[in-house]
Image (cartoon, rainbow, N blue to C red; front, side, top):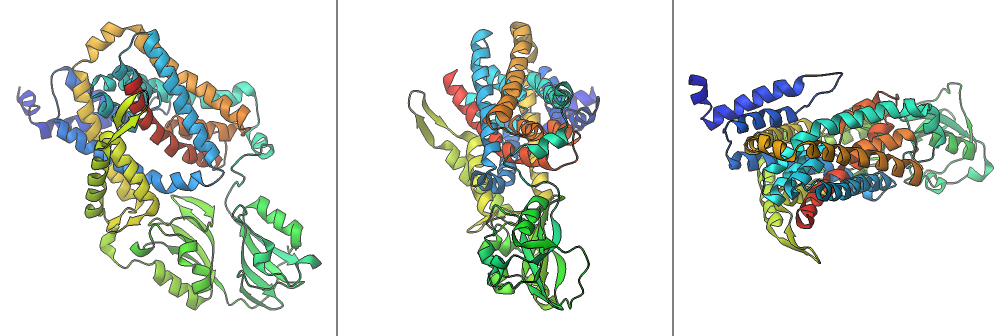
Length: 531
């Protein structure tokens, strides 16, 4: 009786749900678990018995979660739109579009309500931001019931598809990846190669005249002439017999070697006044900027050969926007490297935590934008709401990194704390609200609810894969990675990574994911008007 009375206290109820939900979410069967959605299921259980968490807590969690997701997706979203990675974005969009059309058909076929149908779609796509948008657009907690029913099937179906497809097709994924031309050409980590200039056409040309454009990963870090070396700059004039120390991905290095001369396999003795140093990005003034903006080579006389983020190493890109914690591999003289280290070093240690002023401003602006009516011909007016408004503003500000007093780049673990805390608070509130009607909905709708959720999961999986493989001619591993991104399935990506020792699945997933994330939220709003 004492425990029952304690459950009437909102704060106690919240933490009981979070505790039990975390335990349920961590239970693993064949490597699969519900993760944060365990909180939703436990909350629905408590909601069924009449317990309820204040909508204020739910909306607070929703706001924090959505903003964290937007800040995480922002830098990648616009960068992918300007590159060949847009192909993966299109696949992510098409997977959501197919799921939306399937949802309309399922809704009419089984006579399901709009909130329930949209909830099924967000569960099938394992998209919690989509559920947030669905609840905001329909203002009906039944959407959470649909999400809770379809979510487990959505997780399992993608993992099974990823694991079984290569076996059914009996294909060697490594060979298929090598022979298939796709938007991700580079595999593995950057490598270095020493190349001797033997092509007379290269004599007295500058490095700039080699036309190492933005689609080429190679950076010429040093030029060795005789017994000395110097930094490779755009205006450096090359002579016959010079040896170039180039850094890039294997295919691009081979292409440069074939064009200018031969690879030097024997170690060359020379006086090296250049050093290599790994420098961590920590200065708030540089967060959100890129190499092109700070003119590192021109102003400091150094070369950045590679960048590391989140444990993955990439070739340098002039348009890569810095996030705190990025690790740059820099080549230059000792004096220059010390200057660069000071440039990227921390100026204010207090900036390592979450910037409350910025977070508050992003939320306030996002909420105001979410209230603005948007008229859609033939459908009426809609608003971006509490989910869409903050998501849109967070993506926009996340792209620039810093807008006026708003600082949108934190250490990645800090952003993860905001995201995870917001997510569990939102799921706890949404679950208790939905739980009160769970049994009634299942009894009324019956088997149609299960079949509908299955269809909304299976059809986008098969059609999305065929689109990637047959229309865009991607490799199987790229197709599966993009499919996991389109279905917003992190467990699916985990299964995909186990198929091949390559970062290609993660690159395809990372390119498709932000597009799918945004379009699921938009689709939920549109379906609320259509159904």
